[in-house]
Image 1 (cartoon, rainbow over the protein chains, first blue to last red):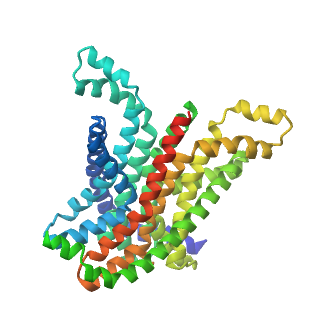
Image 2 (cartoon, each protein chain N blue to C red):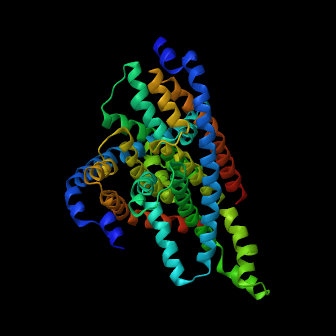
Length: 223
Length: 223
């Protein structure tokens, strides 16, 4: 028991590693703040383009969605970080990571929004148009509010996944929460910082995880 | 264009690195299959235990479910591989990855199975019990039979998403696809092996994604 406390819940070590964890958390926060809205917006654009019902375009969109749903995010990150520079394309670390995560997240969001829009009867859109709304207005005021409500569960789930995936930035040496904890662990020869990082993720994401499962259960019960 | 060919589709480099990357493919397939088998069985088993409503057990099951859904898989892997040895428990990189992904998949599939079980109308429980079936028989032949079918689409999606994370095994030097490709890339100073890795991942996961799309369509038509 003593050993567990001194190895995992060591207060001295925790105090020493707090500055690391704090810096890491801030980067994790900025990454999340950039990635989640960008991916969501891109996904929305994908879904709305899909709704134009241009056959060739739709094949291309489905191809994009399925390709990136089949592609492990870490592989994409490594590819962008270590592959693109050979072509002379260089982004900052932050941009590279945001780009990789957005490409990946937008595919999932695209599929979710697409399913949401498909769940609203076409007649609603046509009725909205016939009352004089422009297509964009019909989409924004009539279709999307209902579509989003129908897919709230997978939307929440995907936001959680994107936040969790910021931990992959540690692999390309970006000092986000996980990487900072590993650095602190190396500096103190103690696993407490890692445990602390895990607990921070748990505390931050636990409410959303609960929310996601409640939404999912409600969606399933409605069938 | 010449550079794209030289750095990403270099035939010579491909020939040299292919055997390594193919060996990596076998490891990736091994981890993926074992994760799916262990994760889904554990998830189903825990959902069944949860249905028996034994309060003490359920507290643990729900806690397990929430913790492993809220903490990123890579953070859990770091804990298993770098923190557990402090108390004398050490696993090989392969087992650490397998353990991590299986537990994460178990937590997510537990939640999905459980949502399916609760979505079955309570009247069916009562009807089945009143015909003389025992609790376990009702669960097996009436409730699970419908619940499992109901949750197949979200379960497939989640299974693919978690199985894709086998790539994080490269972080603890399991010689799987990404690890082998990165090593070859460094050795040959050419990112073509990464292209190879990307192709292999797509060959592995794209059929699964397309299959999940088919399942989803069949499922929504059946309603």
